Length: 361
View (cartoon, rainbow, N blue to C red):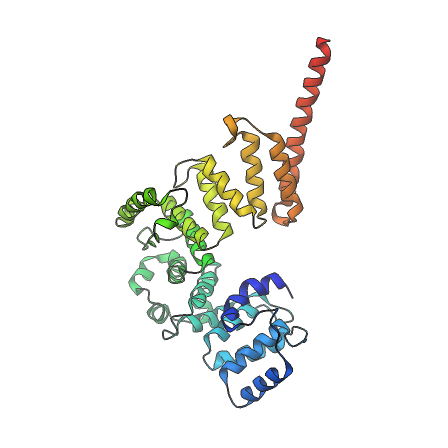
């Protein structure tokens, strides 16, 4: 069982119950949970699902048993159980067969229970399913019923046409505004034009959310942002994306640090600023983010944001080597190719320098 997957996806559902993969639960507690479950305790169904999912009380993790207990909780209306069951099905965890349509059904059940407005993660999970291409038709839910339950105007949904699924996903990401991944995905949708222009924009949080400014300066900058937000149609899609990446980064999203760095690198939605881009990439590498290491190398080899704008190939070599060592399969080969290219330039330059000096002797 992928421990990183379990930690990233399931811990947010269980940590506030003081349950994670490292929690110690004694046998008497597990026995009591079984007794309470036998008596019909819905919370006990859910907690037993976590016990088997994490392999607590010295048990080996068992995704099938976890699924069975989460299913009992889900059918009884337990929204966290519905999210957990959906996640097991979404990924096909352990021996459980992957079934993304059934997963989305349970995410929808959790998100559409209006009395449990605290469960923002259900909004995120359902929005992600829609973003990835599963539709309301796939789970046999009528759009009018769904939009009513999820708080979106049906006419807006209809007007969105073939972008209706994306519009509903964006709406859900907006509702899950405290979840970094949800805000990050909403930023991506704005950057790549996946939502209609009339979609409402999330307001900036406050002076502390504006990077690179002292408090007094930030108040002035915030006023400018608020003025732009009050007329959100005047903002470009890139500007909206940049503001959302900034917000998600403040919530802890490493990917948003990287994407915001890219926007400063290319001047998309923000003024081109290599120094700010470099600072953002440096923040991201604290969490061993390989793509940010690669971009620090690209900035160095091109002299962007470097001292006196002079290329620094040795720094580029260092960051490309660090990128390779992270072991990110999606980017390792690219970093290796670029490392060989930069080393080739350095060796050629050194050979030229040596031969030139020898000719002068």
